[in-house]
Amino acid sequence: MNSRQSPPHRNTAVTGIGVVAPNGASTDVFWKSTVGGISVLDRVTREGCEQLPLRVAGEVRAFDPQELVEERYLVQTDRFTHFAMAAADLAMDDARLGRADYEDSPFRVGVVTAAGSGGGEFGQRELQQLWGRGSRFVGPYQSIAWFYAASTGQISIRAGLKGPCGVVASDEAGGLDAFAHAAGAIRRGTDAVLVGAAEAPLAPYSIVCQLGYEDLSTCDDPERAYRPFTADACGFVPAEGGAMLVVEEEASALARGAKVRAIVAGHAATFTGPSRWEESRQGLAQAISGALREADCAPEEIDVVFADALGVPAADRAEALALADALGEHGRRVPVTAPKTGIGRAYCGAPVLDTVAAVLTLEHGLIPPTPNVFDVCHDLDVVSGQARPVDASTALVLSRGLMGSNAALVLRRATPSSS
Amino acid sequence: MSTQLTIEELAALMKKGAGVTVDPQDMASRPDSRFDEWGLDSLGLLGIVGELENRHGVPLPADADRCKTPREFLDLVNNALKTGV
Image (cartoon, rainbow over all chains, first blue to last red; front, side):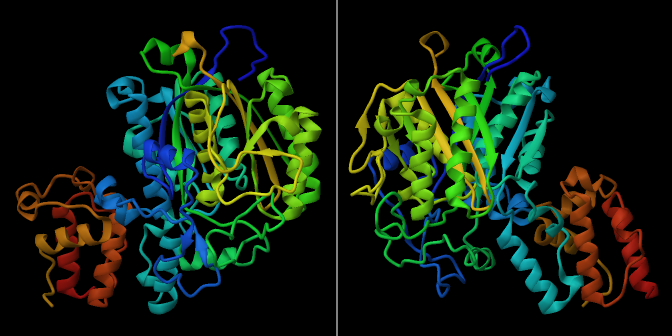
């Protein structure tokens, strides 16, 4: 990211990716399904949820926590932390960052996650104990399993990481803010940060909490439930899962022989208030402009946009107008995609999965399509149907939260010399 | 139910409450090794204290969850169960 002080300039490079998503519990499967435009949205089947008014969601089904997470963490932590731990392992494997690399300097590696709701399933179980049997039957791990910071803490403990750790609780857009937080740590001297988000909001208590959101789609047809930018938009479909990435100071990554997959070039965030979608136009435009400024990037340099794509008509309109406001004429020409229509919105995990898809788009030269979205009714070039080949070197990822946060992240393709 | 806590029962409680698997024979042979060496943290021990109190219907001494080793814990718990404190 941009830095005001004089050299050495410390770039934040993506060197590892770990995905646990509804369409795949590995980066390869996630990408194949994403680029193939396959939707995995389906009826909600998680235990105790079948009778609730939320009919369609993106469930993570190809994930066996017992295979990927040690027994003590299965007992002591919530599903959202199981996802984050498994994704963190995958990311570190992908980055070839092992204990031996930092054993002598554990303070040089940190962890940052974003979280929207914490461990709802674990919390529900213990609350049922409280009201069903009494306070003496609530297990002590409730104190650490339910809350937002659990995944950051457990990942750092499990991997022996003692560098700067943090948790971003700033709504869904926090998934992008986490990258800014990580880049800040790197700028200040940290070598590497595990960064990302994973959520597990598909449990009875958690779903009931979401039923109050007027923006939630309760449509029961998986092909029609989440269709942003169309006249049939009827809200968003929630999902579980997310991703963790390894970001490193570029020069030190290269020095240890890591492959640089992309550069985190710019970020900005704004706040415009809960469900005030019309006002999110200005907030999102400001975030885009701020991220471009930090990345020293002209609007015309953006080759692809990963849209927030809420699926609420007023929010979709605001996003289309924000792109026009911030990118000018280029906002109407630049390819826009929202692969999340095929997997749902995993709250803070959603923009992180979009960031992963953006990195893979830069690497593969293919923009994944937006499943179930045709007949776009806004002045946008939405990629639908099938993946579109593109020689992209810069991607823009957008995110908004239901509570009013807006954020934008600019990613640059790794330069040939750095990969 | 026996009014004495055995090392086998302690191992079973560690597994159920904290997901920590230990071999009871191994623990019996090294009862002075600290709980953290067996992988049990303070919350895990607190949960075991709560479970035992619920089972036996008696409160254990306030410092039960501050025991550092299996021997220390077994001695304290069994003494409390014997005397009914």
